[in-house]
Length: 397
Picture 1 (cartoon, rainbow, N blue to C red):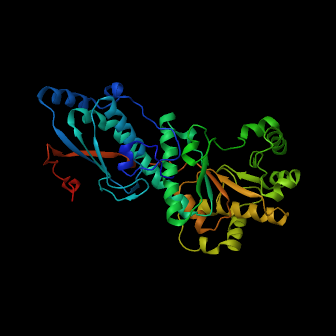
Picture 2: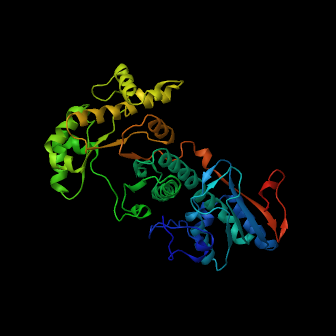
Picture 3: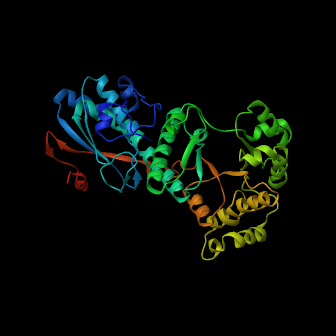
C-alpha cells in the first residue's frame, strides 16, 4: 500500500496509509451507534450527560502480538466525530503495518467522554479482527516470499463489512511482508468491491467446481472458459473427477500455446478425504525424499504430517504434480494451490520447498476469535492519570 494525499487529515497525522482509493467501511453512523453499542456504555453516556462531561484518554491494546491495522477503526471514529461536531485526538503509537507486542497500547484517543464512551464497542470491533488477520497474512507471505497469494476469504466472512475488513487486513499484512522480505504477497482477491485494496480494479478468479460439473469434463470446462474470456490467463481446477494428473495433462495438451507462454495454471483443491491421483502414503514419502528429505526427518505431529505427506493438497502432492508436468514437457505451466492454507500450512510448505506459484486462501482469517478481542481502558480524566488496578502498564511512558 502506498501513501495517499487523499486520506483524511487525522489519518495522515496518525501515520495511516491507504490502498489506492479502496472502499471504507463506516457503518454504523453516529445516529445508529446507540443501537449497536453495549448498553452499559449507552447508560454511562446518559449519566455523563446529566452530571457533566470530562476530557478523557483511552488506551487501546490487545492481549496478543498483532500487525497494526487501524485504518478502518480510525476513519470510522473520525467520521463519528464530524457527525457529532466534535473532534478526537488520535495518537497512533504504531503506524499501519507495524508489529505490536501483546499489551502494548496501539493508540491513545483523547476527547469528550460523552461523545467517546458509546463508540468503544464498534471501535474495538473494527480494530481487533483486522490486526490479527493482518498478522496472519504477514506470516504466510513472509514464509513463502516467492509465492503470490489471492485473498479468497469473502465466502467465509459474516457479511460484507467483515469481508471488507479482512481484505483490508490481508493488504496490510502483505505490504509488511513486501517491505520486510521482498515477498510477492497478495496480488489480488476474489471480489470487485475490495479489489482496490490490492491495487486492482476487479476481482480475480476463473472457475469453480460447478462449471466443471456443468461442462461434464475438465477439458470442456476449460474450453468454455477460454472461449468466453479469451483475453485472460487460464486457471483450471483439476481435482473434480479425482484425476489431477490425467485431466491436468489433457488440459495442457489442449492448450499448448497457453502452456508454453506460462498463461495456463492448474489449480489443486483436492479434498482431505483422498490423495492426489497417483499418490498414497509410501508414494508421498518417496516424493519428499526426492525433493525435501529434511522436511520429514524429525518429529512431526499429525497435522504437520498431513500437510507434508497426507491426503488433500500436501507438499508431496504439489511436488508430484510438478514432476509430472515437467516430464510431459510443460515446465511453464503454473501450479495454484488452495484448501486450508493458513499460517501453519504455509510454514510447512516453505520447509518442504513446495513448488507452488500461487496460493488461494481465506485461511488467514483468525481461527480463534477470542484472539481478536481488542480492549480499551480510560487512563486519564481531565488530565489526571487514573486506571483500574492492574492496568497501570497502559500509562504513557
